[in-house]
Image 1 (tube, rainbow over the protein chains, first blue to last red):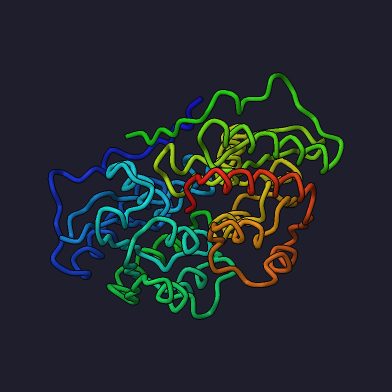
Image 2 (cartoon, rainbow over the protein chains, first blue to last red):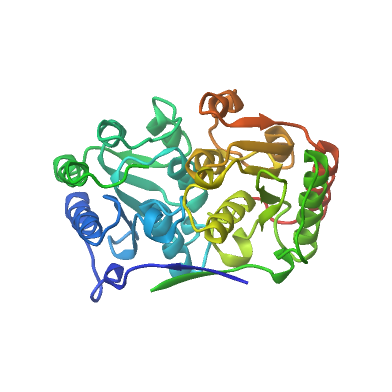
Length: 178
Length: 178
């Protein structure tokens, strides 16, 4: 038995993509989130980078298209990166970073320690997603401190304005909120 | 692009399965968790039932076989049920129940409200999984109250001893903990 999840071909990078800093990586993730909205998806994207800043995998929100509430951008990116590197623990191959255009919801936050990434870079804040009507779930107020206690570093507000602009554009068009 | 997740054929029920109460459904889930250990997987299983107690989907832990940290039993069962019913919101088709042989970890707990189930039935407790070395993640002490505030009912300790016996058997054999 197979559970096959369909992902857009434009998620595949054209050749090798390496980003020198968080801002450059986030700008790429935000561009993917914008493209996902244009294609009828949710306004969220994520990347998994290796220690050299190389893109191992990219994900976008596929909840409505695939009728699958698990397929947040972060979950897609983490699952693809694990397939690419052939391990359920990305930490076993080195220090990996999850770049996400919005702070993780409760599900994705819970998934992060299991994935083996050692760093999370966030664009928009949880309150930005909630301001346009998305639900981030029941998270501790200081969820970032919880990740740090597990040895996972968190950077917030990276290209927040650009990420926020995609969220607002999505909401202004009356797309579904879930 | 496809992300194909392989699941064992024995997860498919032989014909229609309907359970008249939580204990009967949990006994079936525990049997699946035991089978999963025999087949080299983790000691966890889950079911999604419709309002009549009919099994819509079954899931088992596939983390190590599929090298995918997302594939906890609950996530597999929820994704399969959504595919079966062609919706990312199981609540849109009626009241569905998630039966899980162990209280959900932080990731699965976060996934539950997004899935649309209206009831969760748990076998072993979080502390039972942690006692043998699994990590349940950063959950609120009263996580069940959080689900209830969202209108999701929680039943605990259903066939706990049977579920616990599978966990202990797994740990005693020295299988991987993650």
